[in-house]
View 1: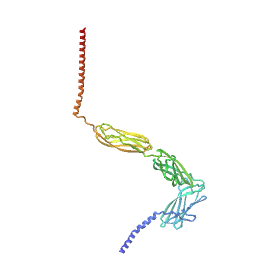
View 2: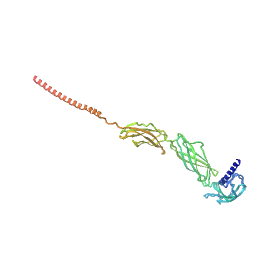
View 3: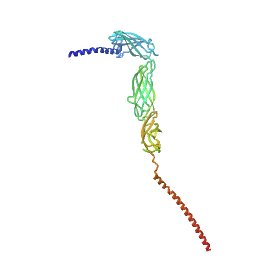
View 4: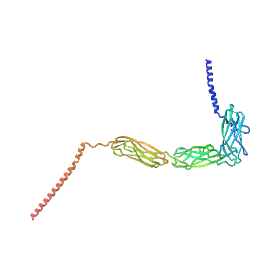
Length: 434
């Protein structure tokens, strides 16, 4: 059994060996061929790069020693100092190639000595150190090490240090926390911005920094841009209106302090607080009659609610019927009133919605819906025959009235005739007495 286990282990090792070798080779290929060794101290250096070594300038001559480490290179290594073409020139010859040799185990000493222009000014000059060599099998090795040559000591800089604020965005609401995003760009061609600081203030005192007043943002390279996020708190007293913010920037460039101040206008908003009262509407109506729908709308916010529109959708009665309520000022109540007229030939229970739409002063929309239910009853049928007979009998008193009126007229005529006869008799008796 022990022999079988030993044989199995050996076979497994034999099977895995090619894969382990390939894995090790892959890891070696992933590693850079050359790296800067910040801890090495070579001839001519008073300290390592980690301890603060810097290239030296004597007269118009610039000298740099760079220790380069490689675990794969064999023989000499070629180093090229390449500066991008631009309007700022640093060396009389903008391109320099040197041959480096191993000075300590695994470390090559790359030494540049280049002539400067006599009128050289302070500036930051990005460059690339390109390294090439061969390994023990003659395979080509290559790597690039980015570097910035910092020229100091002159009376003035190669350009004026400046910054550009390219964009300001803000998400601010009354009584809430928010952020202000400032996009900062470095438009300089030979000046790096370091130790960047930013402050934002509101003259009205309604937009306050949340946390530290000063935001520190580190370094911004030549031609680079960065978006800084400044946290703020908007007070409850803030007006819903544009606010002018003062943005103060400070940084260090070429060893000297620099600053920039700009004003930007941002909007402070408030969530639309359009509250609704109770919906007033009868639950049932007779077909053919009209029904009134009334909804009180109250603006509980600090800003105008604009273009308030109420729309009823009650399939079977109306697909869409709207009324424009208009603008509602803070603390004001307005009524949304709609008249519905069900047709005479419909009946039943109908359900739909009442939708209220509006915007704030910046055009941001808001809306809400309420359910609407209405029962439409059919009209009452016409009266039956007994009812008609009763109605006919009800008309008889009119004929009696005319008969009574005729009888009264006849009595009046009879009385008048009797009066005339009596007068004649009295007149005759008086004549006989005479």
